Length: 263
Length: 238
Image (cartoon, rainbow over all chains, first blue to last red):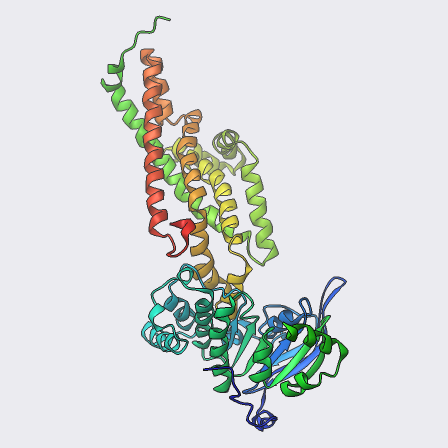
């Protein structure tokens, strides 16, 4: 499977207009002392949408992503995921997190557990599924990401691309309402990147709600519904991906694109 | 020097019995102190890594108290000073009615001292894991307790096995200080033999070799555990 237009048949997918909002970020600001990391960021992701967040290093995109499941705190603004306010003191963050899948730049598989155990742990301990049910689900997902024969391996015995696909399977095993990707291909060899992007493209095609921080402009262009461009802790652009790549509205995005696309 | 060597002293009664009794007490003190040190040390070490500030402060206070006072002094405090400071009924009970007061004092003194060192190693073992693992665990909906139980502690335990081996050896050797509060463990018994027979070199040699055998057993056993729990694919641990 190639990174092709699964959902780009029509430039503005009608689904994205009617679907309810899954992630609503409103006026988020965060600073460490005098250092402003996020400055009044607002964006939303509807059910079934894939949104890429891009921008130069240090622009705050990973921090914004981690605010969505409360791994990072923020000082003002609000984030509502499926009707639940992340920053609310009374919110059961643990429960909310169990419903949001997350994939990290450095995979973060548990090194002491087998591949299958990595995928079943939270299913059994958080969702209270039986071991058998969790294993069955885990094996199905491993086959889906093309690693059905690696269930008994340990993470260190896998390549980076394989580890990242296991990490995606681990997140999917929780039947998440949305998936967060934090630079999922940045730590991978070029050869491995395609395998991971293929899995992500398939996910997007299946209608998974996705927020993806990445430098993969091919993915942003051909798979994402929208692109959000950040710099200096602010969201500078939020546009359908075809519009963003054809005619970015800010000079900063034009410079960013010209640099990143020339490679 | 005209030293009259006589190694047969070591295998003649009652001296052989003394040595064996000493070995027995050494094993009992070191074993019990090690169990106490592991239980308290791991707990304190975990406290020092928690998000809760009060927990971290308590852990730090424990470690700094117990590792900054000489072990010998700590034994004296537990044995001679503490019973006087406690309310009279408890103090009197310790002095008069507690069976084997030297033994229990040695176990508690050595155990709590070693716990401070185990705590530091546990903390280092957890902090060496990096924030990513804790984040991944939290992101999947595991509670903090579950993260420690299923992810952080199993990895940390593997990280700290080599330094813990050294700590276990220290407990075995440091148990000899118990002779200062009257417990006739291995070193104490060899001194007894020296006093009774003037064959100190033989007696101390026997004690030395016994310690070497004990520590070698500890080293071999812990190496075996290290190999047993090694994570497949991580060369450094193989």
